[in-house]
Length: 205
Length: 205
Image (tube, rainbow over the protein chains, first blue to last red):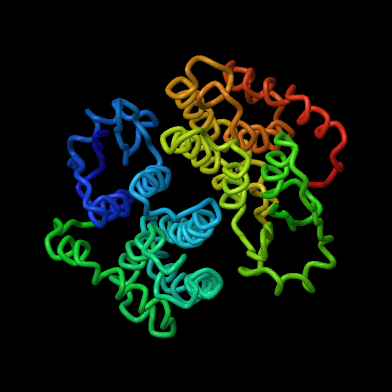
């Protein structure tokens, strides 16, 4: 059987969705967490000089969403056929769009403009992305609480994880989005996820 | 048999990689091209108010890379198993990173800063992405001219398509990247691709 070694910083960040996939499917994996101070000595071990990297059977995979999609497919959390997998990917791309817009705002260096930019993102762009997610749910969920096919997929997990970072900044962002609220509750109450969320390391990001 | 209807503007843009996948695998598809003036009357037909959208068996899929990945899987151009598909996805994410950085520069509204920003992108960030692509080729190509598994995949097609847009601005960008040059030549000489490139509509973008 293949063994899986996931290397990232000691944070949730771009590795957490893959950890959640391993957790909810009950798979063992090596969860290597590099402290920031030790990163320079590890950077050259990574194909693109970045993490996360998943090592499986001697192959190193960078790129967080490619890693997560691979693990989700290995453990049947990616949709049951090509069309379901495509619907899952559409949700992934849509929440990833939101994250891609927010990351440079959140981690930007200009502190004076940051507060205003965050406020603007939450009031405008984020609303568009949340509406888009509810539209996709309406198209693909068959009326259930999960995005695709009435079954938990890694789309639910990535949305859960990215919205968590946003909810920590403004706890009210889902007030107008009842489907997303329910989806979030359903993810959190999966027994293995619930146990993990209770016990996972408390990290800065 | 499923029928495929791809709707986009009358341009290559974010739909062209999917067209190339249909072309090289010899599949029929409906290639709907909306003129910019007609877009407002079609926008509401699209799930997220954006194109490309692929319609298959009554399902509408937005998000260009999700569409392309789906079509590639349908017609066996996505890698033969989960691990090969992951390697393909890593290449996709890496060229998409380059595109995501360049798009706001290319289509940005501030004409005064554009020329300088483009020059900086070509001199710095693009070099990093091209090096990354050659690193991935070294890891995954088994010494052949295609990115993964000695066989054409949609990774080769997306790299071909995105680099084409960049080569139109600076024809010398691949001079230091001999593997990428050869990969590009191999894609272009696939008979169905060669015929398509010769005859496809000449569009603004």
